[in-house]
Amino acid sequence: MVSKSQIKLITGLAQKKNRTKYGLFIVEGIKGISEFLNSHLELDTLFTTQQIFRAPSAKTQEITEAELKKLSALTTPQTALAIFKILGPTAPSFSGLTLALDGIRDPGNLGTIIRLCDWFGIEDLVCSPDTVDCYNPKVVQASMGSITRVNISYMPLHTLISSVGGVPVLGTFLEGENVYTTKIPSNGIMIMGNEANGISEDVEKMLTRKINIPQFGNSSKTESLNVATATAVLLSEFRRQENY
Image (cartoon, rainbow, N blue to C red; front, side):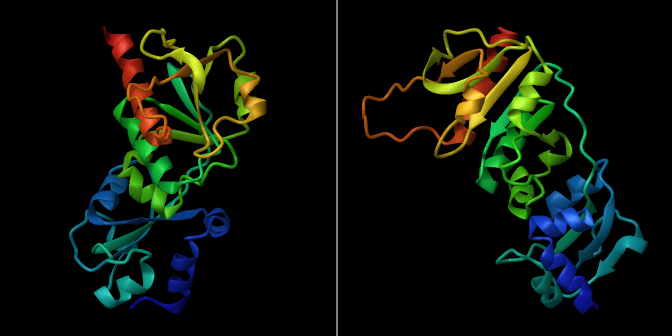
């Protein structure tokens, strides 16, 4: 049976201050939990309605579907909910291309970008302090387990750029160079800006180059690309140039 204190703790982990306080975060669903159980992250507690996971029995608690609904933030809970321990930050290695995010606020965008880093083999993802927390339950859900394979760190981006002097720093702007006719450096930093405001002025001043994904449609009413979509295009072009 799930205790009231467990319910209070787990539901409280929806808030960043509580994740920081307890050093814990939530993972929901069979696929996501299985990914995390096979990763380097340490399980705290697994709550499940079915004994289908390879997890230590001492850390597994079988519960009813009604109890799972009390714990879950999802409209339709997915069989299980697990609590994992947050790892301490690891400094980026700056091996190859490093992706940096300037004020990304939407959890779905961040989760998708983490998946893209995993897919395209980007080892380091650096986020500005005002970027949404990568352990937000919606980010974890959207990352589909990729968060276990990407090194994510948070720091002011001017600190990041200053620490790697001489490395090319690219940012996306409408007036930038056409990414399809411009060589993307194999070792550098690529910065993606906030969904509404783009890259902040103080970071813009530190860029060495501005790049752009050209629009091929003729309509002036077309909205700019979603930041996760733009990231997918840029990382795909980066790998294409590297391999052909």
